[in-house]
Image (cartoon, rainbow, N blue to C red; front, side, top):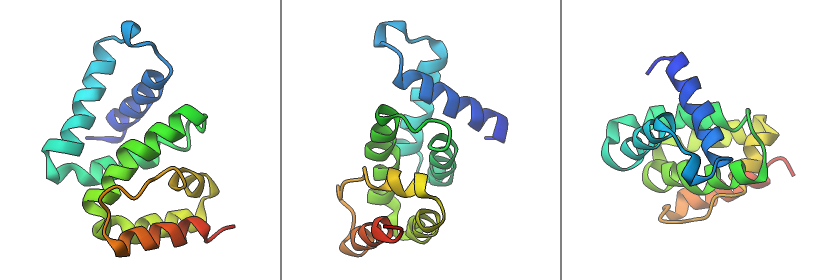
Length: 127
């Protein structure tokens, strides 16, 4: 997926968070299908999921978007692929207060002890 498609996906996801289900269109269904595949079907797409997360959070820091991004894609990434991504998550949490705030909405889920401990420390690293 190129940057233009990733941007479109991020914009569509944000719009979907502020849209009634009855108002959803084909573009929103497409976005939902892509993210569902990345999160639950195609294990090779985790880098795309990580890029998606990094693309969304700077665009919309509304409570609804942050809570859904943290409890959805980010929590899933850390629960299922945490050992691979935790270094990048820690680095971004130290550098970017917005991402650090987003990280605060992640629950443990099925993260390993090590990943969960590092998530908690990263969250506290700027406070």
